[in-house]
Image (cartoon, rainbow, N blue to C red; front, side, top):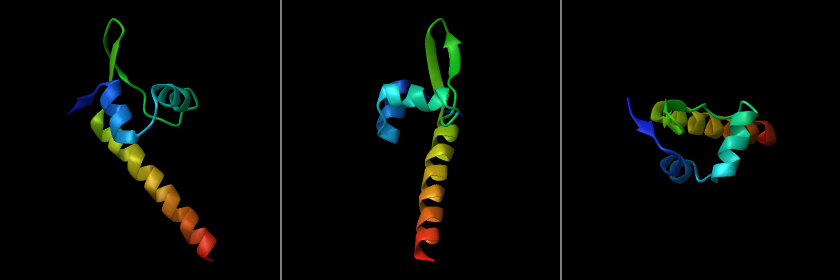
Length: 67
């Protein structure tokens, strides 16, 4: 299992730090794992799943528009 710090999450998702935390507050983004103190990291598989979900939603919208 791989953990990702916020800079890597930002790079992989192309989201800014405030956007990541805004999506988390809305329940639309994976929650981080506490590493102690103020350090947190995200589970890489959960970030990958979130990206795949975004792609699936995009594709579903494309299918609806095509009908």
